[in-house]
Amino acid sequence: MSQNDINSKYVEYLNEALSAENAAVDRITSRIDETPLSQIKQRYQQHLEETRNQQNRLSQIITQLGEKPTDSKANLPELNPPSTMMLKKTIKDTIKSVTDDKKDNPLPEEMEFLKIKQDVTIEGSEIVSYEALIEVTKRIPNLNSEQIIPLLKQSLEEEMNMKKWCTDNMPMVVDNLLPKILSAISK
View 1 (cartoon, rainbow, N blue to C red):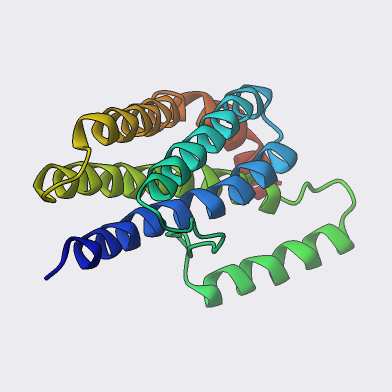
View 2: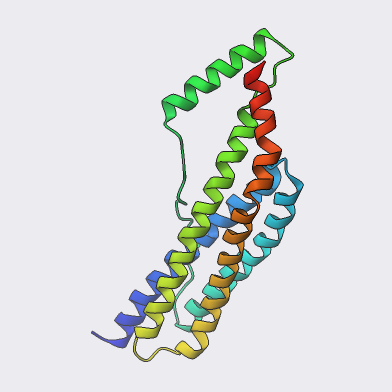
């Protein structure tokens, strides 16, 4: 196998990570727009900048290897309740809100709670991706790994910090959302 073949395979792995970062930009942007919690909004604005830097680092590595960075977007992992459960809940809440104007529809709070759990899942998968890339980079012959590995480690550290922030702030999320959810079901 030639070095060009090896480098091409390596770039496939890099582009796989880049496609996840490309999708993450869209996800984070929508999370900033949709979340009702200002703490999440602020942290996600910071993480959006980090994610754009991660895209740039991956693109830089790919370009230095003489290849083209992808503009594709990966399908990010999701944590979804069974669709029948969500459909039943949506119908029930819609009927409740139509028949009694004093009842809050808990669906937005429940969806926000689901999304923060999805965010933790996505960060975890990005961590695994960067850890794998670092290990592959160490083993590819004739790569400029002493330049590449620090870039990948910087992205890994940012993803680990974001996952930790999400996990550490889960009590705040629950404190903000659960009372509204419980209030709506107890009426």
